[in-house]
Image 1 (cartoon, rainbow, N blue to C red):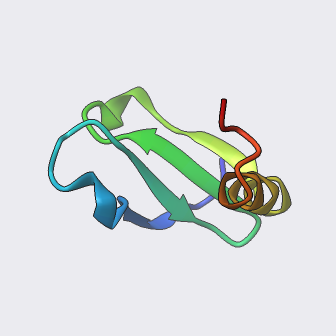
Image 2: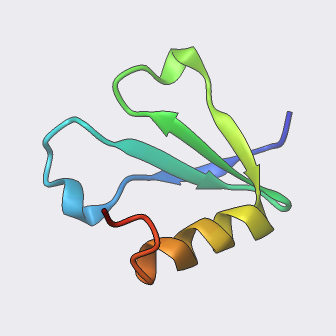
Length: 63
């Protein structure tokens, strides 16, 4: 498994408790549930993560 460090949540969560954490490794990005960290994480290649974030910024997932 990839070594993921520096876990953080969005500053927009405002303590609502319904969010995910994102951590970064050398080649992978990890995503996990803040309420259930013991359940594990998913890892995504950095390139795919960057594509996902670009899509978010450009509204690609808006309905």
